[in-house]
Image (cartoon, rainbow, N blue to C red; front, top):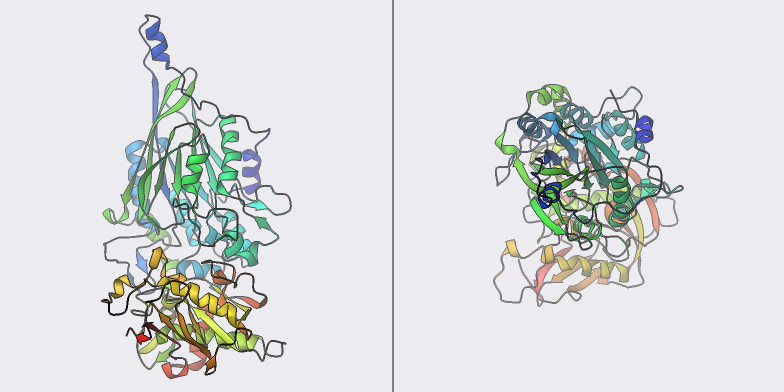
Amino acid sequence: MPLNRRKFLKKSAVTGAGVALAGAVAAPSAEAAEAAKGKRPKPAKRYSLTVMGTTDLHGNIFNWDYFKDAEYTDAKGNAKGLARVATLVDRIRKERGRGNTLLIDAGDTIQGTPLTYYYAKVDPITAPGGPVHPMAQAMNAIGYDAVALGNHEFNYGIETLRKFEEQCDFPLLGANALDAKTLRPAFPPYFMKTFRPKGAPPVKVAVLGLTNPGIAIWDKAYVQGRMTFPGLEEQAAKWVPKLRSMGADVVIVSAHSGSSGTSSYGDQLPYVENSAALVAQQVPGIDAILVGHAHTEIAELKVTNEKTGKTVVLSEPLCFAQRLSLFDIDLIFSRGRWSVESVAASVLDSKTVPDDPRITKLLKDEHALVVEYVNQVVGTATATLTTVDARYKDAPIIDLITKVQEDVVKAALVGSEYAELPVISQASPFSRTSEIPAGEVTIRDLSSLYVYDNTLVAKLMTGAQVRAYLEYSAEYFVQTAAGAPVDVEKLTNANGRPDYNYDYVSGLSYDIDIAQPVGSRIKNLTFGGAALDDAQKFVFAVNNYRANGGGAFPHVASAPELWSESTEIRTRIAEWVTAKGVLDPKDFSSVDWKLTRDGTPVF
């Protein structure tokens, strides 16, 4: 049965002020005290429990690639999906005893595959009498105890998130997701579970859920004025002592935040995006942290708390249910209380086990429906389009995105005071493997080109601001001297910048001179055949992630917003192709930029 949220909140309510953390300094053991008195010590009571964790599931229930219409494969032979994780979870429960285990997740659950898109937009769970979300069905069947909110939980709006929450048999946790008016938690901050070892006092385990403050930027359209997202360290420092004062013997944090200490949105918020290790370092009283958001595999990371000297153990399982993290926690009962003696973390690999038939049977109909949906033919392509070299050459397949965005924004601004301004457009080479084959074009072909559920925004920018934008984007390339060998595998991703934070900008012509240092690479920048006028005004068609500050590109977040919509860019691409019927590069392709070295083209 779905969780009664009001009942849960009432049970979870914290009363009274937080108190100082108990047990920050270990007391002498009962055995040592007895030995000092010359008495034979009584055997200490001990207990071991296992906390299992996943993160960044992104709608992956099956080991299936909806974009390729085939079993998922990658170069490392990984397998993904909750059906695989269910098998691992079942095995651990049998080995350790179900009553000695806990299963949690660190967020980004309901966005990321055509499966989750279908039940958010095509057959939405919010419709009267609508379906139960496949992720809720799967996670309920597996028996999750608690799930932290991820930033992508907010991509489809608050209504969809609340409906998903209603359908789950477990709480969605977010201690730092606050109601903007009351500044009280908008979701349960924590989950508490009592374990009952045989012949020993009960053990209380608390799970504190923390989400990402970047939500305020990335999903501004949905959350502004409704919710606010303070930093993880701040809220952990508030809640961990409260949980200890409530009798928690073990405190686990489930954090939708990476461990690197970096941010992708610049200085727009006073919070660190990837702050899980900082939480471990700065906040006393935490035993372990399940890390999410960064899509990185960390089997075990030990961080020393700077106030207590205690080791806090972190683990991040690989995204898409490719791994399951295990925290093995050993406790000892001494002087009337339990204390954590040791924590060890490890990961299990989903490729080592088959799917759980319970999960495949439960959701085979939903899966089949989505496979049918993504294989709908919407047009015909006259040539094969691919992203293989799109990150270092102006590729027609990316021009398709910018052309669709230009056309949508121009149509939206007809009759407005901005209708006569030139429209330029940005797009990123999200994938290195997307392909639209010559011949029939399906929804899955187009979806593989635009893998994110971004929506379109129109911003007002000046020529000078666009120039700065392009210079920032050009930092993506590794500085390469004229005459030096060019290895395309080492040419991009300077300083770890991902492909999705490199932008094409259409409607202009420019060179990127990679022999030059950062900040002086944009050459021969023209508009309409003439040198760009810094005072020229443009309408900039941009995705909502970038418009809200994602990637920390200059000027765009603060630029005046002229128009926005909630329809996904990938849907607009499908509509454009459907209306045309024929996908011909001559209708959208143009060479707007090229890489050079001291003025000589690289390719």
